[in-house]
Image (cartoon, rainbow, N blue to C red):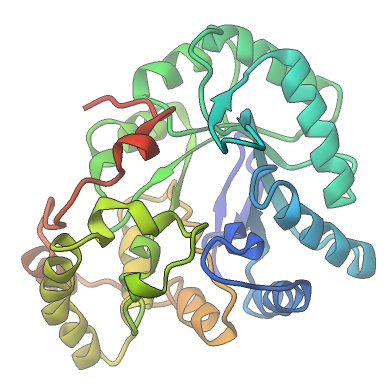
Length: 330
């Protein structure tokens, strides 16, 4: 597994990370044994960068990682997030970037993860009531106190990133980016590169559409993010599967899984990009790790552009409810 820079300090991590949202049951039932088997497999394949959050199962994902660390020590570079709160009765999301809230949630995350500090701490969603400059001051204090190693933001605009960077160094920005979601190319990836910020694509496999076996919407549980996502609703979903068919045939001709190609393509777009696909399957994890080794030649890149041109996907990236809290910039 090749390495890439994650933090402005030059800290290196595996260029393919592991998103741990699925540990909390967002894409089907799971348990701690399965999560720990996945973590062991990740280490076997050279993956040492984990991404989680306090709201993934309301602490479940972090706790599973923490229990692994209690038994095995900490061989990982860990990123977690805070600022989203959920009403236990209505499940409504609110966002809080106040120093008090962030410090409280960070301490809870450290306890669940069984660590004294996390390598990277993200603001999961912006709280527009609080200037991003003030949020940066809070995060810089956490860093000065030795509680975090780096500062990150999730789903912010290039303009917000520039404002934050005027106060202190931002290490990473996370946003959705894949062969079917390419809006980050309209300024965010470029701004990250200019400022020395790592760009961390989540859902680089299109929430499962680039797997060998496509997801089946009729099986989605109530917690599954895709259940109400426009791209997985009909008629959009069948249109997307139809367009994916020739791409997957092309992958078959290359003798490589679509997941491997999707990861390799993402890595090729820029050297400061570190995708964090999520999985609980050892066989799938192998495919993801191979994305670090597979070479996307110019001919392969041209073929992918022909088969999946920018904007090919049917349906918006998010529903109206799912868009809440995300900074749009184009």
